[in-house]
Length: 228
Image (cartoon, rainbow, N blue to C red; front, side, top):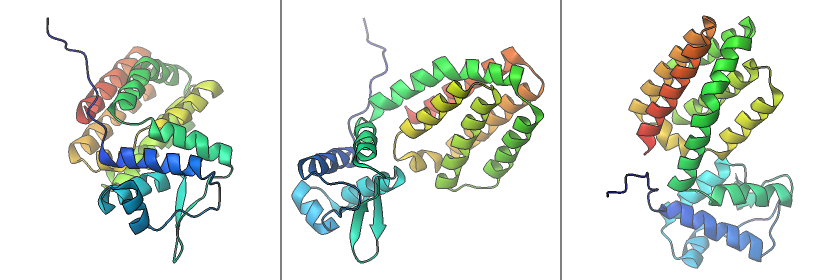
């Protein structure tokens, strides 16, 4: 019998580099304010291409782990070493396996979240969601679309009136895998996201609880198809 279960793709090069940076930080006991070696030196130490190294550094900058200081290279900017190690732990547990796990969580949680937003949402939440849709339709920039997508799902969670659900939505957004901007640069992904969001908002505006649930379920399935 053929195994039809979804299997994760192999680890990408930049993910292995992130793991090596994490090991270096742990072994050298580096913390906030400390500077990493220059890129050329890091590439030699890790025996990786400069391209893979730069991609890893870009991801860690997006996650708030590293920041570029002109003339001094990359330094650790996390508020505390505890914050640093927690973020690195999440970031290095990456790849398609974790992406699949996040989608599975969203498939369970977000349809019900949308239903609750349709039931409990106030006019101000609708206005906020529609403002996000307007911005989403006016840009094709991956970084901006990533931000707007996060805002959309967090606003949806806020519309439920449930503080715990809102916090969980924020945590899910923080766990979404790098490099998310590449996913959002995909034109097909942009169209699917905007159309799905519009249908969800329409259902919420109409107080259509079951419709909102169904639209969110379909939206997640369509987005998932562009990732795997």
